[in-house]
Length: 170
Image 1 (cartoon, rainbow, N blue to C red):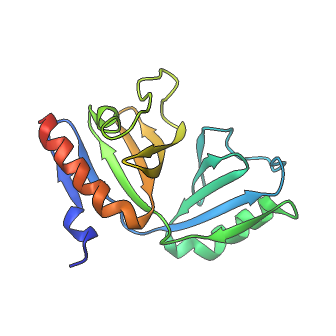
Image 2 (image 1 turned 60 degrees about the vertical axis):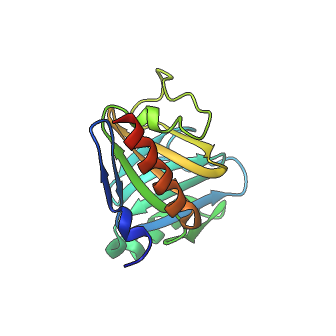
């Protein structure tokens, strides 16, 4: 059993945290301001036929897609990038957790300072912040659910911290 497997699902009344199965993660980065159409606006995410395209920082996007569609996803993003950017396969470079339940926003305030109650922070909106000194990316997928991405080297410690915080929220 790997360290991550111990945290596949943390269930509690206010929040459930699930370590998600690996998927293809592709970074699309533009040299200058993006000119391609079909890209989400800053701080937004969109569902595309091959997966979810998430704005992660100025000029950079993350496509999450099934591993079986990796080659097709690379081709799609390369077409978007054209000569103005690059596509980098970072599969395995980020861990993803699914937070669901009425208190997922509250949980993200433990160990960091982030305005999760902003009325504009709704489904298909994204944010990048720091939590317990680790960079995280948040993709709101539903009113009571968000995907949280972090570097794999921080995943275990963040999951342990979240489990302790959820237990206190009880």
